Length: 179
Ligand code: IMP
Image (cartoon, rainbow, N blue to C red; front, side):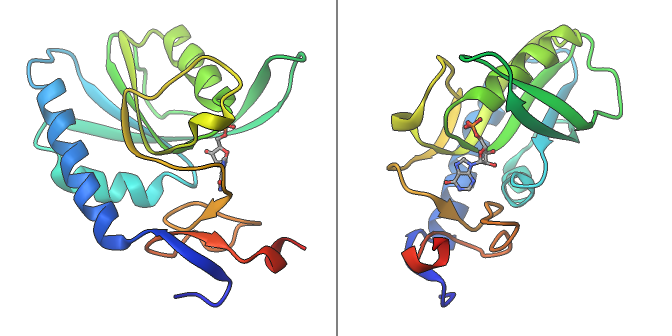
């Protein structure tokens, strides 16, 4: 275990098993889909999850990446700025947005709107982690790996100041690392 970690919340084995389960649910969900299925992963946190999840996907899919930064819009909304956009048109496609964690919900809310404005036929969300106690807007992921308590977590794509993304598990940092 990394020396800055207080506790492993979700082990590598648990993540692998969950990706297999989610893969099977997603295969079933899209089995009769006629239009293209595109997995859209958000950089950088979703990369390990996307890589693990697609091992268990039996469908014909494409995947692409978006990078966004969010900033305060009005009091209740946050706007996003696109740092890297999708490479292809998504008109009349089924989009599965692949997220590492849904926290306040502002990011996925803004991205769903953006993908719908680009002409996606359907937008669904798969998130490895969900922190429902932190939600500020009424959005939810369609497929969720793990519900977690209100703790700042790192590893398996999630960072603190860009560190710890490479760890193969999800853990809680020691308090002194924040100070
Ligand atoms: P939201 O817009 O508040 O739902 O934030 C989603 C984004 O915030 C995620 O994609 C992460 O990049 C980041 N985030 C939220 N909670 C955590 C955490 O516990 N650890 C690391 N990053 C987090």
